[in-house]
Image (tube, rainbow, N blue to C red; front, side, top):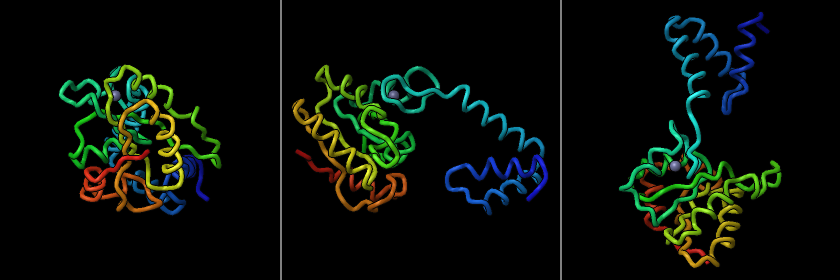
Amino acid sequence: MYEGAVQDLIDELGRLPGVGPKSAQRIAFHLLAAESADVTRLAETLIRVKSSVKFCSVCGNVAEADICRICGDLRRDPTVICVVEEPKDVVAVERTREFRGRYHVLGGAISPIDGVGPDDLRIRELLTRLRDGVVTELILATDPNLEGEATATYLARLVNPMGLTVTRLASGLPVGGDLEYADEVTLGRAFSGRRRVD
Ligand SMILES: [Zn+2]
């Protein structure tokens, strides 16, 4: 529709999640009209995020060093691990201020349609973390949708024989959605009302 670089920009923006063709066009023209310094800062941030941000070798959360801020915080309770799908879910749970334990980021959920099986997630790493017996409770905070439920069920079956308490967030979360879409109060309530799964 447009010439050269403008169309390239619209195409690139359109590949981002949640950005349709109309939004892509709006953002592209916003950037064209913006101050040069602002656009440069955005471009540099994009490059820096790919070159400097790593994933925590313990929990899989985003980190600026080998170990993330939460895993490196000795005040966090090492006996409870909250399992989530994505780093953004860590942020959502942190916002509730209900949880003082550690996290484990799976990197997705089991989804046969998308070709994602247990081996594609950081499940082996989770089992390794549970082996030394320090962890006494595992909270399954995967998304309240089909894939999230399937993943929680799979993990519960896998982990229950290890003798630790496995819990799932209480109902009340918007079904079919992402954990991050729940407001802090609802998610906090789901957290404190978590129940045991056997
Ligand atoms: Zn970590």
